[in-house]
Length: 512
Image (cartoon, rainbow, N blue to C red):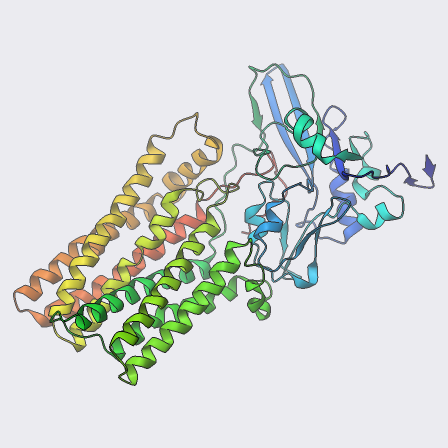
């Protein structure tokens, strides 16, 4: 039925149903009218696209076929954006639409990482993330969304779908399209009509020759490394206090040691606010502790920093004994959970190179720099004995970190084409080898030098009584090891290749 320029054919929802998009790839001509109509309807600039057209191709000349996929939000049954959002800014409406609440968004952009389709997109002018809401105001007025109205081929439609039937029967057949992420991640509701393509015919993303490094996320580079260094330093502080309390003749940690163990976290944690589009609302990141690892990290590391500061106060007031040891133990447990939560932020299916156990191991491994920090402080203020012990531990931990790096190198060197998400992982490998080859070598060699060789040199110098020279070497070792970890974390962010819409030339989430 037509009424002016609006098509009034919105189905009535029954119990157990929700709205969804149907995209007919056989009717799409790749004109991008849907993108333009969406932007005009929602007042978005060219760089902010809630609907995007991806391009794929198959066959060889002259027998070729071009395939388009016009995709916006899939209004998933189990949306990762909703579960991961630390501020509960996503709401699954009764009609199935995944709605983003703009006023509560802090612009952390975690949803842009979590969504395997890269649907939410950061708007730097507004400082928040925005996304498709299926023109819900139009639906409520009995009108179809702007993209549906604008499509000259009628390739986009609005349908009602029985959610249970879709999950149990039809999703595996009609919910998949070439080069789209695994539907089990979020259970998308979009239905596809595809052209007949032989199973043995390769379908290639039209942009496979383009490869752009991800955003550097410099505030997060420093924040993650410094909080991990602080945890390592606090572990050294706790072990020193515990061993002294039980009667071993080691130098007791003092206020200076406790202060320097806390300072990296005190510097690093606030840096995360620089990553936000709305830094003034940073505290609301703790809101969704039930499902968001980001909220859990914010709570745990905030508590760790506060407790570590109190611990430094206990040293200042010379309150020791079992009370301080127990307080340090609680603080340490909170910090360990905080770094674990921090690593789990990145172990998400939408980012294959991050979604590995090695991410958690390497995050904890960076703590060896904290041992070097405390060893340096002890050498300057408490003599050589405690420094020797911590240097030995730091060197062993640095060797473990080095083994983890070699494990990562081996993984990419022997990357199997049958590996799930091989396309993205192989592109990460290309970034590490071709775009960042020099930095990758710097990371490896600096870890060998400052994580293993220099700590050993410092130990030998201390054993030989060359205290002055050892102090200089140890300061250099700490600075070099810290820089090595920062370089490694920089590569971690820049080399990630997300899942997403294949052939997406003109829009995406990666900030330049």
